[in-house]
Amino acid sequence: MTDTQITAALLMKYDRPGPRYTSYPTVPEWRDEFDAAAREDALSAAAQHASVPLSAYAHIPFCKSRCAYCGCNVFLNAAGLVERYLSCLQQEIAQAAALLGVRRTVTQCHWGGGTPTFLDESQMERLFHALTAAFSFSPDAEIAIETNPASVSEKQLRCLRRLGFNRISFGVQDLDPAVQQAVCRNQTDTQTRAVIDLCRALGFRGINVDLIYGLPLQQERGWSATIDQVISMRPDRIAIYSYAHLPQRFPHQAPLDGLPRPDAPQKYALFALARQRLLDAGYHAIGMDHFALPGDELALALTRGALNRNFMGYTVQHAPDQVGFGASAISEVADCYIQNVKDAGAYCDAVEQGIAPVERGMRLTRDDVIRRWVIRRLMCAFTVDMKHFQQKFGAVFNTYFAQEMDALKYYEQEGMVTVDADRLNVTSLGAVFIRNICMVFDAYLKEQNKGMFSRTI
Image (cartoon, rainbow, N blue to C red; front, side, top):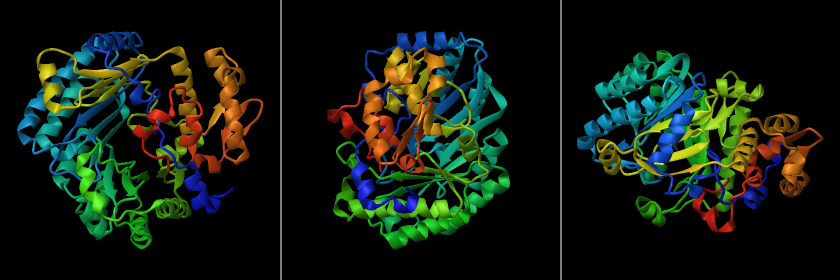
């Protein structure tokens, strides 16, 4: 089945709440009992693999204003907290580096938010130098930042390139003025294009644009114009996410209740339009909702089966452990997940008292590690080599996953997967529904907790 045969009826059939699988087990399974001592043990265990590279993440939870659709950990009007927060980031970075011993090589670094460019140039330099003082960045390290094209300045972008940042992601969401006004955005097509052109001239690679479908007031005509405008800007990567309207979790979304949003068939039509338009424009599908130009590193890595995935999304860097710094930041080290407290003030209180700011976490079992590996292979390569699985884990794939293989027969009948003696393959149709297919291997997923996740389409 080709992309043009993906109908609204098929999308509706498989549209259900489900994880994005940036982790497995997913966050709802993590426990408060995982504490500062457990974090110290995990980092100390990770230190034993001195030659293995790391990923580093820094969370900057500040914004000048909140977008109405936002589901991120954000603090407003917090200029007075920034200096204190940066001092605490420096302390946390130094403390983690000490526990990691001589394991200091970083091949991937990402700043997320919030809006990381809420920091001014001197503050960005301060944080970056704290990271490079504690860790050794490899010459080909992927150093990325998220920002808002309406607020980032040329001076900031030049500062970032001077520091060594080489990847950048812009939250655009939609360029229709009516939609932007509804969700509290304010960037124009001209402004967005100018910032992307500047980044390209400065030498940024892997320039990404985020879009959202299902927002209030979105209609096919305006959305189609947005897709055409973004394609004409030719970013290296485009990510298209489904809007999750959850005013119970995010009260600031409540004002959107009174605005018309695309109903289910309309929402699926928006997604299908964007996907097909991007494929026609030469972009390669990376997972369900990411697209990359053929020469981009993500597309090349997908072709050779070398794509990887972590909390920072898809990446070509194979650093098995990620260390996160800041409020709500997540670490994945030594087969453990660790999340910091979400409140920026509480985060600072803990760090200043010399306490690791841990809110919750989880130590993975052998079964967790096995299932995580399978899910990541499906998400990144759309295939699982059963012989490789047996060599890696000493188990026969079809035997270990007997129940799952039986469940996959349904997707096989739908033309989404193929199974032979040595390999499980996801078809081009199945790639659209990859989250659904991965859910087959999720041992924790139950009906009662599905409502905690965004919808798969």
